[in-house]
Image (cartoon, rainbow over all chains, first blue to last red; front, side, top):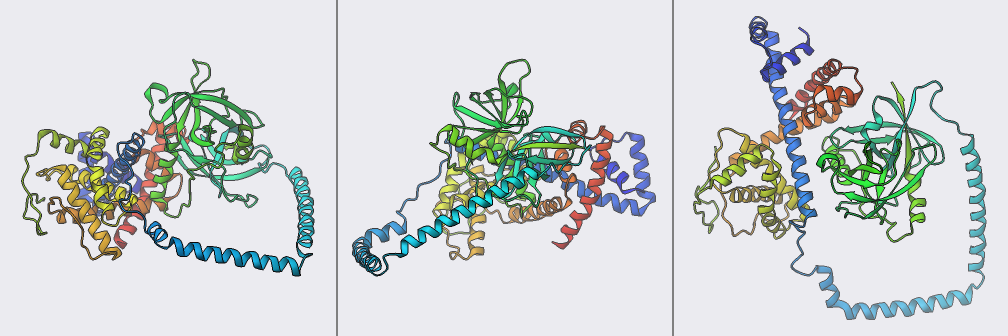
Length: 367
Length: 204
């Protein structure tokens, strides 16, 4: 008897979905065939475990959300340490000693630098020249790189059924991108393209139906990871009317748009999303929504057909949740999401300039 | 089995029996049904106490969150088990579990000689903890099997068993032409997952 069939029968049996006739047949089969019976016992245990696994995962995610919400509303707080930290105590105790030591060190340093400047007056100038030459070397290298860029053609094989899905952006500089899960519908292969028009092959790490979030990983030898991302991810609630902006690929070229948070909930009271008033077009799906500090507050995923400029975004806390629950099953998944943004206080065009290198167009090759 | 109101194991702690209100029992039942409102109420009511306990015993805020959430997990398991009856306050029970969890962690890390400050009442939770460890082991076996199975099986099984999507939703989301194809794929994945699960389960 086929394993597939047993699995199906046992599951239906456990959920009492078999009709009396089927049930009798099934019980007869168990009696007559000890091998099947053994298999049924195993499946019984396994499927119960599977159900329980699902329940535990749902409970855990509920716990996580509750913690998050209560923290957001200030119902639970981080505790202040009662005693002053040890290091501060040491500081107040040894302040005088440190001051004396520091002034001695200062005087010594001044003396030594004086000696150095007396005995070797020409050294700094030579260093400077060298530095300049290095810079011009770099310049030459970079022009060569640009010409190489222009030579590169698309990697996607001609004739493939390509759909320009949407937008994605980095969550971790090592090539992890997030986008909307619906962008990847029916994908056999996924390519992402940066603002310079270069394609990279990406694999789908995870798709989460619930929050419409997908995680991609660039899997391409040509991809060079950067050291860190300029933007961070917000864990806080965004206030109504707060200005937001987005970057995306509704056409071949990256497009900027700005708007404001118009409602805390999405369509029909959906608490996972929020509502934004902004201009968005197909292709903007999966794009990041930034607040004025350059922190990601959500992922654009839908617009209301019946109203103008009403767009919905999955809140960024869902990205945290998806990645956290993914780490549950994949221990060696090394994704770190930054909280702080280095773009705070910078003007908008500087923010956009810094951010745009980490926004990618998603091209989906249909299977 | 559960022993509530047994004599204390640690000197100087006074356990007095408190009547359990119907409301408390209702909250307890609702936690077992994974109801958001109940979880939030229990969280709000008890988290600061546990946080205080952990932090004043050499723990960090992250420790407090982990320990509290694990204790919530135990509460959930108890609420789902048919033979368990709540005979002491949720607050007392949670505190006892957290205390036990934290003591064990401290012993394990050998950070201090198991001397935990406490001024509250506790109940015996040893048997519950044994049961919890067994269930956790099974959960971890499944988790590790899920980690090994790869895509698209992992997402597909998660969509069905964790997110409780129906086969039509799954079919359209994963791009299968109909629900039957998706269902077939699901059973194929289950057969593979079962093998991985038992391999893991037996090795533990």
